[in-house]
Structures are given as structure tokens and as C-alpha cells.
Length: 390
Ligand SMILES: *Cc1c(COP(=O)(O)O)cnc(C)c1O
Image (cartoon, rainbow, N blue to C red; front, side, top):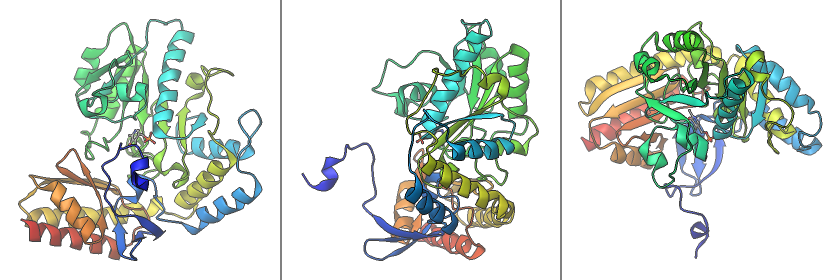
């Protein structure tokens, strides 16, 4: 067996391997340069190796990497304070991934209902084509056949409804329903943006029926859409929110955030994670938050987004293969009538990274620090590929 055969074959990988990155640029083993419009799937929101985060990681690694949650972790407390200051939440639980953050949210929802005299309520309503992770509970929450196939029986306690239809949510409510879990914008299914009023309608339904409203902001959070959290485009708030991807700029970290009333259902011994919120990850996350907020990175997203929308519009006007484009902040998609796989492969060949979603859609999640010139360069590559292929 060669080295790659020693890895379980869970990914259909491109053969390219990167060795170095700065900002929006990556270099492969042969020294070829790439423009990264995917940012590690919305993880490297500050670009590759942002100096402040890299310095914070190096300094923390030289002082203390890990101690365990059996002891106080002051950096974790500081991070919880900063994170909760950005939103409705009062408290945070730290873990290591988006799936784990959603696991925590699911457990917290069940426990909350039990603690409030409704042990029969355990079911969570989720949306078709949503994505919440690959653990057994979160793949059961993920209403996508390709994610679930082969792993049955699924974990009980989830009910699926079409996305962007609040009426269907209300009709799916039963005496067993405990909560509603959705992404404010569906990421993995190709940047599906719900109609205005959808999230507000979910809030009203949750209030009317005594349910918890949970937003999975794993992909849409950390400034991706131009607000710190994408639900902040509206004034309503959830009861629980999950975050991961961009949280610590690539050091694995997730978090489940909640209001004090809901978070109170996690008491000592009810939930835990060995690595969750260790000093190294917290140092990386604190430096990430500092850059996003204090250095004005999120404030700069609106202008870059306007430019990207304008370029997407003109691209769509000149290529009939483009079915539609979608963009919120720096979360964008180009849906094609066909040939999307070829387009993605040729883009990679010409030095542009983006991802293929649902077989038809090219998704872009560039660093929030991308420059106007880099947006133009990337869009020019895509324009050229579409012209040469169709
Ligand atoms: C990526 C993603 C997850 C899963 O995160 P992992 O860190 O891969 O477990 C969950 N929800 C959403 C919306 C995501 O985009």
C-alpha cells in the first residue's frame, strides 16, 4: 500500500496538495499558485496564516497547550465572554467541531424539556437539504439521503420539513416536538437563502408552541454574511446557536451557545469534551475574534460582497449555462444547467479553488479579507472556464 491507501477512503479528493498559504493564496507541492475562494470550507475567514492568529497560536503553544476541563481555563472564560457579547447568548459550551456543537444543542434541547416537566417532548424538526454533521445524531438531523444511506437505523427524534416553508413546520408539530433546528442559510446544499420573514415565522411558531429555536450557524457565522451571525440580518434571536468552522481560524473548535434559561439545563456531569475549549484553541479563537471585530474585517465584508454580486450578475448575463446565482455577504453560489463538475475541475487547473455542491452548484466562501483585485482575478478565471467549456 502507498501512503494514501493507508487513509480510509471517505473523501473523493483532488490530487493537489498544498504546502503553504498567505491570505487568499495557496501554493502546491510544485510551487503553483492558487486563489482560494473556498477558504478551507469557510474556516479560514481571515485568510491563510493570518499573522495575529499565527502569533497567538505559537505563543500559547509555548506556554500551555492543554489542561482539561477539570480545572478553570481563563482563556475559555474570556472567549465565552467575547462570544456571548456578540449575540443573544449568555453561556457557551466548547467542543471541537460543528457536529459536536449540534450534538450539544440536541442534548440540551432534550434535557431542557425534561427539566421543564415535558419529558415526552424530544423531537426536533429540521429542514430538507440541511446539513448538521456526520455523527449518528447529526446525520439523523440531516435530511439528506446521501448522508444517511447505509447507516440506518437512524437515531429517533427528528422530523423533516421542506426548507423555507414555515407552514410546513407548524403542521409537523406534535405533542413530541421539542425544537426547530435550521441553518439560517443552507450552506452544503448550495447557499440556499430563505425568503425574508422565514426565520421570524419560525420564532413565532416556536413561541406559540413552547419549542426551542436552534440556529446552526456553523457555516454562516463568524462574519461570513457580513453580520457577525447571519440571523442578525433580522432582529429576532434563537434560543440556542451552534458555531464552528471559522471560530478558531482552523484550529478545531466548535461551540454551542444558549440563553441562560436554556443553558441552565446543562449541570455538572451532563455533558463534556476532553479537548473542548483548551487553551490552544481558545487563544486561536480569541485572536480570530479580535481581528474580525477590532480590526474591522466584518465591517469590510459589505463592500466586497457588493463587488462580488455585481461580478456574479455580469457573469450570469454572459453565460447561458448559468441557471442562477446567489450571494449573501461572502457566501456565494453559481448554479449551472450542467457541467458543474467539469467547471470546478478546470477552475482548479487554472488556479481557482471553489467547491461543487449537489452536483450542479459552484460554491464560494472566500476569506473575508479578500481584496477587490483578488475577487476580479477569481471571477476572470471562472469567466474564462465557462467561455472555453460552453
Ligand atoms: C460543516 C457544517 C457542519 C459540520 O461541521 P463539522 O465540523 O464538519 O462537524 C454542521 N453544520 C453546518 C451548517 C455546516 O456547514
